[in-house]
Length: 97
Image (cartoon, rainbow, N blue to C red):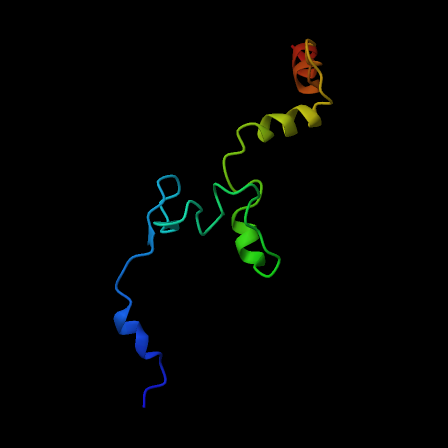
């Protein structure tokens, strides 16, 4: 007797195909949702029992096109329409010459 499941020889139909955005094989052919992140659902697929998967798909793993700007503006105290103060090295160099 073999220990494996004997039904694996009969499983020859593809259930998932490539997803066009990320390229991984997560798009179910008959369902409208995707297996990896749960796209097309209202909420993002996220479970605490898989901490490594949460780490792969959390904030700052992508490009952060908008948040990068927001974080930079927060560090500058949301200043707008002002000129930056002259740096001390530039002031010291001009006074020494």
